[in-house]
Length: 155
Image 1 (cartoon, rainbow, N blue to C red):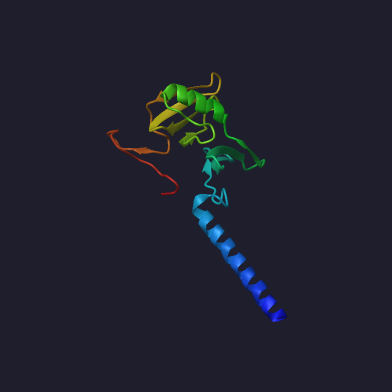
Image 2 (spheres, rainbow, N blue to C red):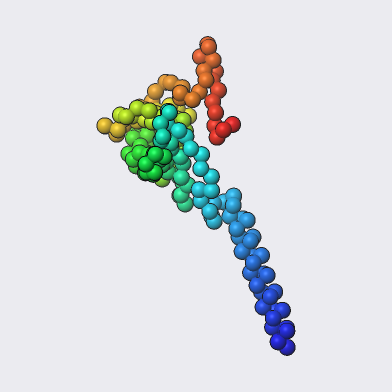
């Protein structure tokens, strides 16, 4: 009788392990189990500073890292950019889920980025976004200016 109990305990233990493995495997693509499993640094010029996107339960935020000092802080005021981008574009933009690409931090008074299929400049001093008609510095524009190529996630 006692061997039957050991077998039952073992079967329950195996079942529990399989259920846990299925939960972990299902969570890989849904972000319900692990966040920030990959980090893609975007270096700022030739400095020791880079920015990256950090995943959250509700979306993403942008972080700025100084590799020399080890600092890791918010890259900018997400709420201020979301508010000013909403106002300038007429579209609703959530601070906790900004979808910005081609961010350029080279200017101290402003940052430029692409969002909502347009290019923007954000001024820190007056917390405003303004649409600009320029290609991001990472794009390679054809000589006639009609086409451009760009690198996205190393592809």
